[in-house]
Amino acid sequence: MKVKMPSADTATPLERIPSVPPTIAAVPAHVHRPMWSVMIPTYNCLQYLQETIESVLAQDPGPELMQIAVVDDCSTDGDVKALVDAVGKNRVEFFQQTSNLGSLRNLESCLNLSTGHRVHLLHGDDKVAPGFYTEIDTLFTKYPEAGAAFTHIAYMTEDAMFINPPFEREEGIVKDFLLKMAITIRVQPPAIVVKRSVYEQLGSFFAVHYGEDWEMWTRIAAHFPVAYSPKCLAHYRYLTNNSITQHSIKTGQNVRDIIKVFNIIQNYLPIDKRSSLRNAALTNYAIYCASLANNLYFTDTEAALVQAKGAFTMSKHRRVLYSLFKFYLKYFIGYNHIKYLWSKFIFPGKTIKLLLLPFTF
Image (cartoon, rainbow, N blue to C red; front, side, top):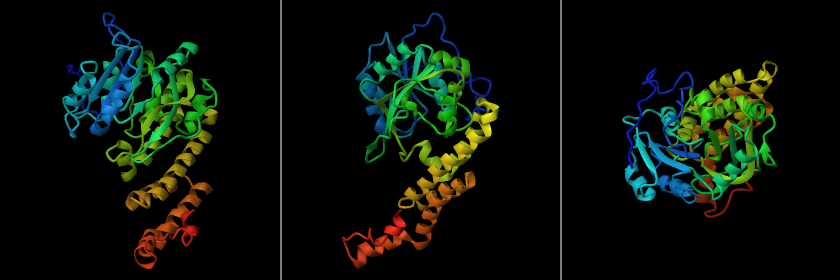
């Protein structure tokens, strides 16, 4: 089913990156309000979209209780509507922008098109595990004061899935969630559901294309309690080739945007904690970028150099400098070249792990 899109924010219709949070209008009184709105923003993620939709349909309570919609930002990788029609079988609404507006405006459209009391923004390359909506419902029922609720998450790459230790050991309202979010991101988009009234009060995503979710969840934490379950019930696809994250890492836009996010977050924090929390956040993200540089060295040296430079720009902490030392040592001795020569000409099929142990860290 294809539905006509509402017009974009008339105040700044051509501004791809809004400078202030766009307004999310209240649902008109005559419109039916289901409990859930699962809004799936898409752009060039067709190869994953069927899996995403099916993960929702597998726990669909029916149209009276759940709105399910795909909102496409003029993808160029295939016929998104045809896939939605085939998989959704008239259960999934389909909206398409009249022109490519960018991820922030597409998220804004998702929120304005939603009619449910609770909104789940599920990106078109992510998915939810069985029991996700039941668990979120339990959280909102137990903790009605919560403006948002989220679960633990697994990370998917092209080759594998991995799960970090739970953010918190116990279910409940997260203590000092604002201060924790100010230091490092604690939640990824597929794992969190937000009350629509919260978006109506605080507005939509803005300012950056990378890290916009970090800013949004921190903004919510500054105004509302947030509930959490340690059950791993959402799956986040990490560093896909066409993702905004991957592009930002290649160009260094991630560093520029994250610094901007940290500066915005300062406005949500107690004045006496702003400086120390910002420094801690910069150090944590610099460690992440330095680690990225070491990992990307083997597959994308140019992107690795960009991340190494960004890490050094953000922090001179000893952990950052040590990680950068490892990276540049490998870079200057030509670690990849040595590996190739060893395996190709010296001892074909044999490992050089022991020889290069001092440089693998």
